[in-house]
Image (tube, rainbow, N blue to C red; front, side, top):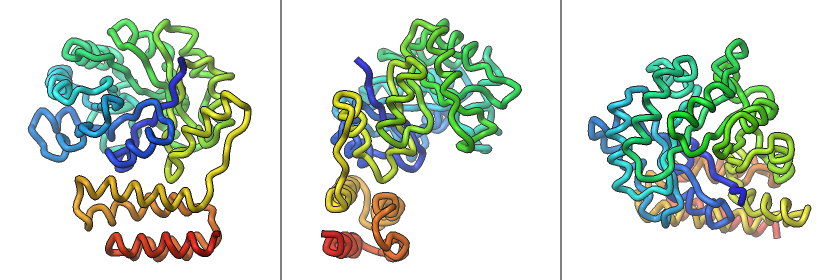
Length: 312
């Protein structure tokens, strides 16, 4: 059975947001990207990013790194958290990550990538997946070769973002390369890229033949997309979300975050989420200015109440 997955997003897919997305239909979610080297050197923040204690066994821990022995240690530590699976990031395009030889840089060094996957599989007692891109640039589209290597190295599944590292998030995702990957391996393939609506998800399934779909930017301020995708795939239509539902959900997310973060940090981190939730409503620009000026939860609640009152 196909799954609709919340893809990892640095600074976004924290514990609170993962829980909200699963509430609205995500079959499972992936943590923010965690540095294997950070785990190896006992970095507190890296360890905190692996906290899936409230995910009820429905979260994958995503690790990145390019040193096999360090990855093996990090996976061993991740196993103590009882994840649903381990995901290895070999697709991150961020210059700092790539400059260290991690993320999508590994698409240029398949032999090293293979050693990293072998090490992860050796240390893991749960399935290991690998996320990567169509290639490093338009002159090296090697997703098919890379996927075949992942399969041979013991990966349970792969997730392909239909863009090169050079593209970052510009242009359109290439669904054709995802289809080629699907036809070249026997393991499950998850399609990723440009899933902003239920129709996009159906198109991904139809055009690529992929087994699962991963939603990333399309879930920003819109965890409802998971329910809507499932409704559309089953019935050919889906229910729209009201402004009131959006506001109730953003406050739910804030309350979930308050369970493990201070009010100050919660407000700082929820500002961007709140701004995403109000996108498209009347006077959104005005409300965003007020949201980014909020200093406590009460102020966020008052803004939500005002928006709700004006949009009854």
